[in-house]
Length: 251
Image (cartoon, rainbow, N blue to C red; front, top):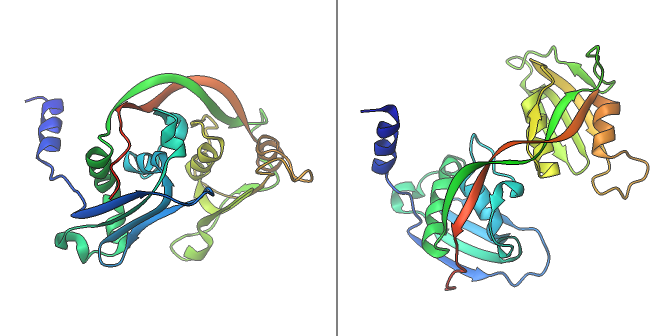
């Protein structure tokens, strides 16, 4: 038996996680912004979330959601918003929201398959990406980025990253945390080619919508504050292709 065959057989025998009961209605809210997640007692609630948001979380990998640019599907996935109330079976109901969170993708995949008749496949496509590089040839970092000397075992409170609109503050974090944030901000995959290893402290501030004229764009901020730069290019990107999807029957 080949390794690939064994993986398929293992996947086929994995129990399918699905909500025991679920209701869905088109959201009556007109504004953007929504919330979703597990609550105590095994209850799942999603309020005013577009279908694309559910799909991005359902098919996240390595702990990160996909980007919108990584989903190939109809435009209504971005515009149609729904309110969902669901509950897991008694087998999982005793789990805390934190314990149920890692299982959320599997529950959402089953829900999308059942109620939206969703069918997907993954493939690699050549798409626009950003490459993160050192801005200076001598490798000198910017004034607001330095290598961390903190021992997180002794000073755990200093080892964190805080993300706010137009501002990221980090203490003793690896560069991949910044790259994940940049990918989400720019809605484009960011590839690390800085060759930087280890953990860093940094403070990055920019104008998120270019209305604050006293703050730089994120591209300028990266170069001026951290000594890094983004270069636009093309490269292979893992995408999720929607083969079939339908608007659900509300209940």
